[in-house]
Image (cartoon, rainbow, N blue to C red):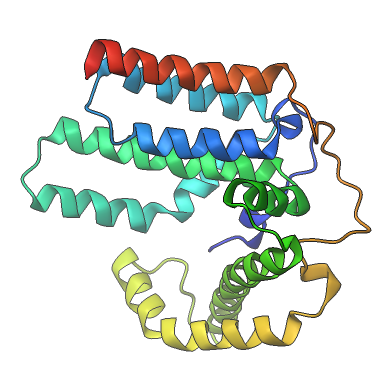
Length: 243
């Protein structure tokens, strides 16, 4: 089953929770761009180790990140099969899968360690949005669509279990077929629920009365600079040694 808590902020204390949201987003974009670099063994292992270190520093249970990967298993399997059909080298395919997985984990690192308000404000600063509340409402609708989709999917699984049609132990192929069969219905229901719940304060990503836990609104802390220096070093190494 998908888990709606995979989309939620994690109320822990760590160095990553106090990193400037703008720095997090910029670092994420730089990491995704670096995934398209020409393959280099040193850069690959450094990036993978870096992501693993960030996961440890986030002070969030490793099982939660493993659950994230598990929730994306069908997507990763589909990409793997697609690359195999292109007759690519197995080593290169594995590298691409690792990079995609690392990108997903990096995004969830941001999601788990950044409050909803700071998440929205960070995006607003990066893309130059003037009306932060309007932007928050836009991202709120996207965010709640996925949450409602997950909830509806889980509810259907529970309904079938009550009817005696347990879907837990069926094959992955059968699960995918069932998922596709009810995809259109769940999408329509999720959109409808988002429209109905849009004015409910508990679903709003931006709230002026909310006091953020983020301590470094207008300045950078030590780990912010470590983030920045790491990617400067990564790009410099690529330009000098790889490119």
